[in-house]
Length: 226
Image 1 (cartoon, rainbow, N blue to C red):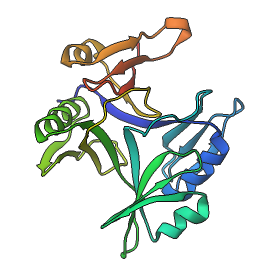
Image 2 (cartoon, rainbow, N blue to C red):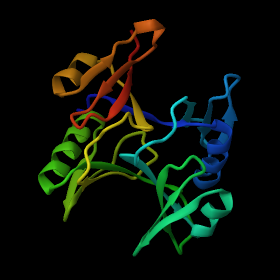
Image 3 (tube, helix red, strand yellow):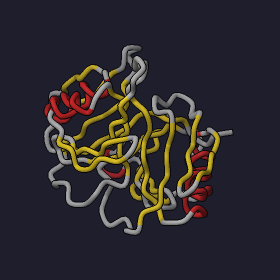
């Protein structure tokens, strides 16, 4: 049984309207601005899927978690304000208006779901990829598939992304992630026993959730009913 349930995705941005307009175009979800200049994206069923939170610090390093999207063409992203960083067989890596990496997968068939997968950087080696994928599968449910150089978690309940895809990279994590996920749980202690580290406790300064890190140091927020 999963220790938590996927809740939503959070992206740190310099301008929530600019970034939100872009991601609304790429994901097909409705942008709704907040009075405090933050924003969220809501899907057609009325569920908030992405939070866009304005932060003072600029992007300084490559994101260790990035979004992969399905699209009819790379031009859709360019027209919405992205710029191409690199092209590889099967996908194109772009930078959104905030400079955040993401990949566009061009599909010939009609697109039913634009949210494709979340790509996670981890330590190099199949063992490292499998280790962190298996950890997340215990947290949010789903099954792990291993391939040459990466591991994936699929069939995650309540998650609009088809996969969490973990691939090895040579560089270590050096800064707070600008992209993280939120989960809900009724057993925070079990998450900690499983290997999550508490970075900031619920109630600290009026915080309404607990900030954790996974074994790779990736931040996540856990929401509880108590």
